[in-house]
Every structure is written in structure tokens, then in C-alpha cells.
Image (tube, rainbow, N blue to C red):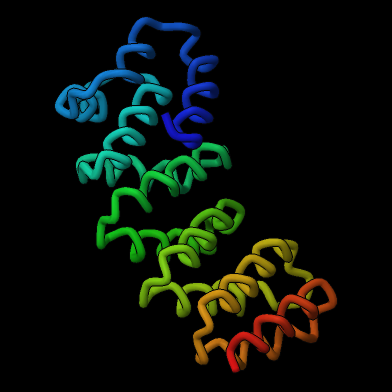
Length: 188
């Protein structure tokens, strides 16, 4: 059992209240059973999350939609688990989905994990999405400076020259200045 699955299992064991279905979903090798959990009515969220995570890590694309929904969940632990499974899944739709979630201004509070996922994916959608999110965060009084910092760090890691102007603008913000300077140095 890898560390991500172990962490997920500990969290969901408590959530499941020790239900027999929990142990079954944790150990089954039957991907058909896991896929059924995602479409059966009245399944609890913990069961759907466990099934989607296991399908994603197994490379089974039937878990994709559920993982994207979990990537945008209000619970950061669910988002992190979903991001891990999406990386393991390797579905070509993942960068577009992560970019859509990261740039959705109505869900900006939940955009941190999609921003970090875009950095990790290093996909063509990554830099444009991070630039868009960062531009929105540079307005006066924006409370999401941690998200802006994640964008700055992500753009530095991506090393995409298209980010030069926005990173230069970010240097004027006290909380972002040092990270923006470091990111700009990585572009050259």
C-alpha cells in the first residue's frame, strides 16, 4: 500500500464508521466492482472517493469524472487525494479539467490543488491557466494571496517565457516579491 492510499484509507476508515463495505473496497482487485460503486444510487461519499481513487491509480478511466469532482471539493484532503489519482491515471483530459477548475472565479477558494496539479502536469494548458489565475489575484485587496503565491511558484517551475510580464507585475506585491524574483530568474 503506497503512502497516498494509506493516508486515504485512514481518513475514510473513520468516515465509514467501520462499515464492512469499506474493507471490501479497500482490498478488492475487481475494477468492475469499483466502477459500479460510482454509479450505484445511495452510495456514501467515502465509498465513491475510495472507488474513484483506486480506479484512477489502476489506470482505469472510469474514475476520471468522480476524481475531477473531488478535485474541486471543499475538503482539501479529498482534493489532494484526487490530484494524486489523476496524475497516476494519466488521462489526457486532466489538464483541461484542472485548468477549468483553477480559473473558475466562482470557486477560487478551492483552486489551490488544481493550481498545484497544473504545475505538476506541465501540460500546454498549465502556464496560460496559472497566468490567468495570477492576473486576477494581483488586483488590490484580493484576499487569495496564497493562491497567487502558488501560481508564482508554479510559473517559475514551468519556466514558460509567457509568464515574464505577470511575474514582473507580481514583484510589486510584498507577499509575492521574493518568489516572483526567483521565478523570473528561472525563466532566463
